[in-house]
Length: 319
Image 1: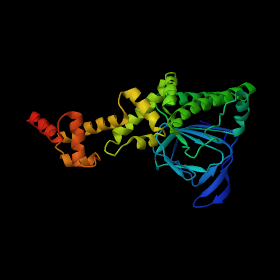
Image 2 (image 1 turned 120 degrees about the horizontal axis):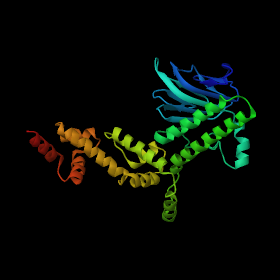
Image 3 (image 1 turned 30 degrees about the vertical axis):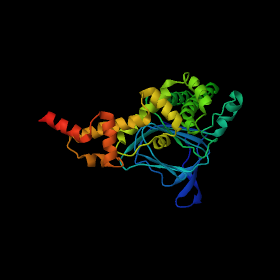
Image 4 (image 1 turned 180 degrees about the vertical axis):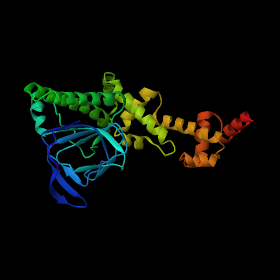
């Protein structure tokens, strides 16, 4: 469903490696649906802020000099000064929501409520990331809010409808702000011991759904990258979290530290390989251990026997 789009590309602004176009839209633009062979010929920008929620994998979104490979559940924020373009594989359909609105829509609400509705459009740090990955209840929540905007847009052009549209957009932005701050605030320096104690008390009152879903995302990431070298800093960076908060939430939810969980997953993978007859050396290499001896030491510490003994036992049991 598309609402209020009025024109196509009409002005070339810059020529660099690629053309950059200014594209004009009405103050409010909404789209929900799928398109095939979806690729922009050049970068563009417009007067509106833009929110995109992707419901399918595979597209490539370029924003300035950053390139994002899109996954289902990726939510993007693009301000009115950033040139960007999207491209996809030929013959593949891409399902998404797109909402665009002028910055002026937020200003009176910011003054009225004393709340920065445009924080992920304007007040960005150097470490800002344009996307937030959603799944589970968070994804469903954002879809419901976007669907409500669509319903309000379709209700007519009366003053009442206009107010409903504005309020539903603000409700969406408030929800996204909450999620974005939760998943990115942890990039700051971890607090000192006294601050940790105070923060620990505050965490009791936080919405548990947010960190539970992030922990599930991290567990899936570890499972699919178990053959790689994984450390706390690398995983924290991947998920834009401070290592202290990542450790705190992960252990609270799983009972394991991140590194304990990584080790457990590697041991499970090692056992599966040893059962198939893979040599100890090849298992150590495949799972990115520093050496055979390192792998043997970790395996024995966690299972009570050496990898060679484990493989022999399994072989004897199958005879």
